Image 1: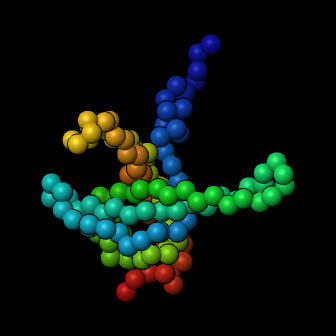
Image 2: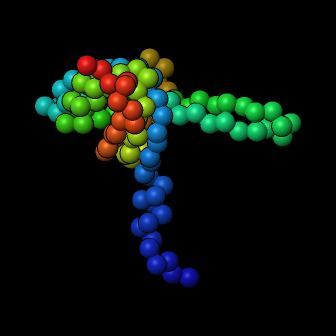
Length: 124
């Protein structure tokens, strides 16, 4: 059976939208190959009911990287506790650890868009 949109599945799988709270100020808003880059964390919270009818809360931390003008904006305005909507792609990189020789992996969200959900958490 032939699929009508074979590219759609991989596109959906690699895109991500999330809204939640920034964990910390963006670190190292710096230049890399003449492009500004900002790294920050975003927490998403999930509340679910277990089999024993007890509610559980789960917090997941996400590493976010923003480039170019978005990095400058994030570095200037995002504060710890800011409510953000972030849209971007999921990207995993790997490298070999120099000390142990072990293969390491890092998954991060490369932000394409960021919107602030509340004005009262902006840094001035």
